[in-house]
Image (cartoon, rainbow, N blue to C red; front, side, top):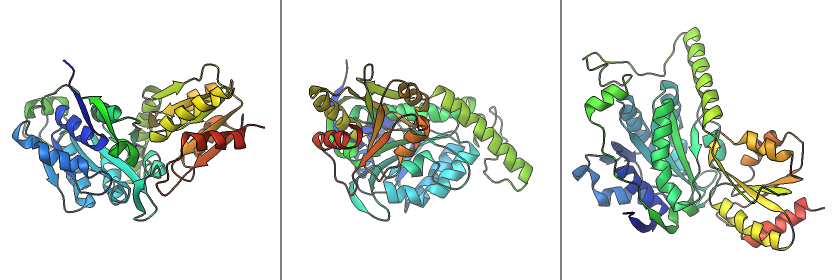
Length: 359
């Protein structure tokens, strides 16, 4: 029987983490994602599943704890919000280069700097372009519902372990704080140490059941070794781009114009489409679910059909760069964004579309 609950997006992440067999959570409180840790502390999974839940002394500490747990083949995660994730970037780069799986949750707030505690989508560059130093990418899942906040925890872990790379659940503060009915995932038991050794022979727990330890590192003192590492990473990223693109379309079959939006803004654009279609405009919505890998090929396909695209975001125009690269000048690409935690209405988005796209 399905277990339906009413909860916040942040709470859904915590419950999903426990249910998907997570071994450890290491984090630090920051608005608007603090309910993730608060819910885990209230649920006390260390008493039921054995999951470790620890408030670190800083975001820098928490990501390095994740690094250690991931090096052991454990299913580990952290969560934070924009400035906190900025502090994690060195550790994230280390984890990516060491080719270790983990899940990083970022419930975005406004910036730059300490910014505002209100919702934003200003961390698109930080996440999809790597964020830290070096040539690496992060699988980035963008939920637009509380249900997806829960579902993408398990999916994020699955993709992270499949490709031995960090995965990010990138949500804006609206989705983290809003409440909706959801169906929680079934319980999945944590793996035993023997199962971890079998599934993750690269882990530092030991190799093939023997006592010797593997060395997990991102350090390469020789140029040839660093080049080989980067070539291996790029080949893996190409494989991810070929196989893991996810997106959702609404009313695109006959669309002459298409909104491109993610997270909570995609929901606003769906309402704007209803307004515009009632006025006779054939408009659809393309929602990237994976911000990386980005649905470039689908936008290129739609370019042959539509007169233009309209990118809508809670930032100054970050994803619009990827939209324009995909379109490659074939049709116009408009942009409408709000900052500072100001959420546009569907009516505002519809008016912005008519002002920019309709000649």
